[in-house]
Image (cartoon, rainbow, N blue to C red):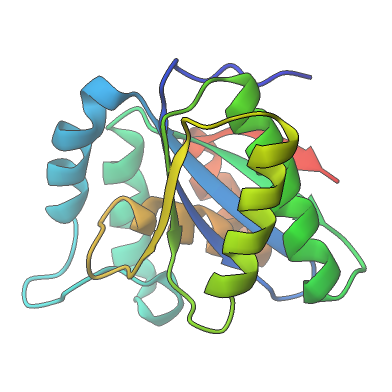
Length: 179
């Protein structure tokens, strides 16, 4: 099923590897990026350089989810069950790139993981070449550099945790794709 993404979307991606493999892609219209970034930056604790759901208190997590949902951002969650990371991540990235090409997305930002960046670039380049896409800009950034990555981190963490956390993140989830 094709994704309903705003044309020229900017997409911010993080993952969770506990149990199944999850990639969450926060999708933002280019006209909303600046305002959304400012709103999300305002949700971090005073004195913190970023939000990382794995190390936050439950009350902080809930407040962040409510604040992020109020921006109207939606995420797409890609899931691969029962496969090692070296199989699951390329499958998720391949599906993501296909969706972004189909939707004529403009920019992709992935959270920087130095151990994965080179492989990610190879996968993304090959997927873009296969689809004849020369316009999608992509890069890796650290969560301290790009607050919009915090949304993807939150959704991936909540989705992986399941139960009430998945319910709490529901307003931020636009679509789930099991691969």
